[in-house]
Image 1 (cartoon, rainbow, N blue to C red):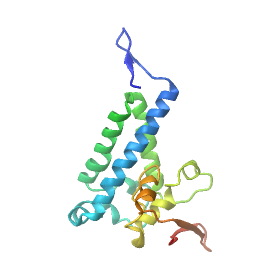
Image 2 (tube, helix red, strand yellow):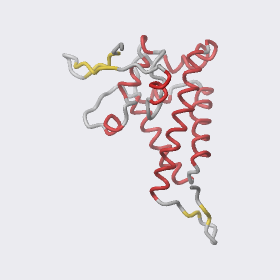
Image 3 (cartoon, helix red, strand yellow):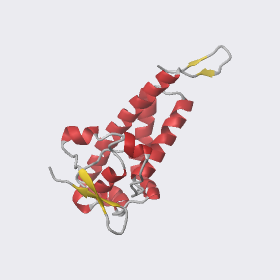
Image 4 (spheres, rainbow, N blue to C red):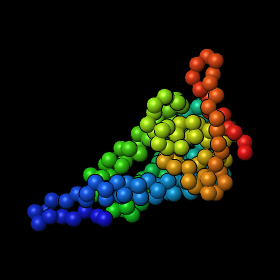
Length: 180
């Protein structure tokens, strides 16, 4: 599924369906990596206190807060997770640029704290702004670790906390946990 170089040394891009499969594989790999590293950062008191708690100072997430984290967390979650996703999926550099731009935009949207009608990320992904907002609430820090695409690992490993959107009388919506 990887690209090939032509006789002139120019990288030949795989077909669009192959690139889509590579992106989906990369999404699943990144989600797997991020779930387990993120959850471990919550379970390890040293890592939480000295590394991940910096990100959780944002009780109410905002868009740029997606990237507000300790440098070690950025290295462990984003850099290593991205590199592993890239290498295993076999993407070309061009496909990787598309994938990583999409992943960053999705992560920023997940932290924006806004539930916008018609938001394509809310339509196609269950792991969205409200889902991640629950994780940043005090009662949700042991739930909804999955990031940035699918809630697969939360659902499989019992860390999924469903939510409801409650309309505020002053406008907007509030994500509230729903206990099973």
